[in-house]
Length: 393
Image (cartoon, rainbow, N blue to C red):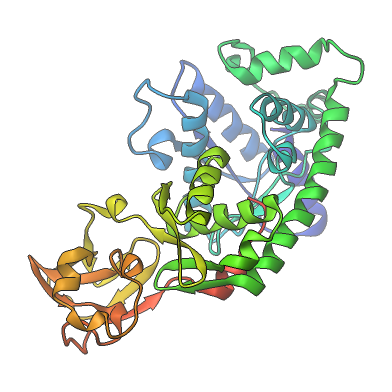
């Protein structure tokens, strides 16, 4: 509510277009009333307001399992992202405060996070290439000061009862910060730690990007790194490169867990292929490769033409055919692939155009599959885009 008041003042002074949105998760009585309170406040400020619901970001809703707050957050961000796209909005402002930042840092410290985790929430972050820019303009402000803003503006607000429910980790962390056990163990100090960690994170990601620009190559939906040069890189740089490659190849929203990544890396560097987060790490042809794992695509199909596995766009006539991984069956129907010098591990998960058990086309094999000139492929990313995307989450 305070964010809306302050943005209304800023837009009035500088010009621009401002809209407000509330996500009603519908998890407790009174949530609809609180959404209506926000809508009324927006109307008084002359701001167009929309109310979204859980199903807008997560069609499955809440099934009572897993981490409720994490599921709610994912659904909320999904709904906000779609809402912004539908209205042509390029930036979405979120109301996280300095207190939220300190709580985030402390929670991540308890989980053993490294530099990236302890950098906390970023003031600005773009989601992908076509997503909104998430802005957090209140990270330097305390909650108490924002309540004063609302009192001065005569705006009534609601206190979320979940903010005092000690079933949630964040609420317990909030209580610790309200009564710190050590001097200096407070909100401003933890927020300052996040700022310094963010500066360190930027340096580390720059080192990873520099290494990728020199040593990385994208090939047939996989990413490889010069093996000797990769092995000589510092631990942090190698892990950032591998985590980013796994995330890119498997089209994941988050990087894999570090412990699992390091185990797979150690195996690959010693010549034993290993799986992690839907990918296979292996050594071949002087490189360490991150390939898609065939088992992760078992049974997966998509309409042809269309997108395949976050890695390819397949174009061709609409004949009611499907896209599925080539697999051993597709390779058996594409005998020319061996002469072309393709890595078998890479093309096993490349897309084929199928009519039942018959392979109609293998668009990514450059003519080494069934002859079907009306089908073509375009990779959704390449070496340059992978390197450019190396940045903090």
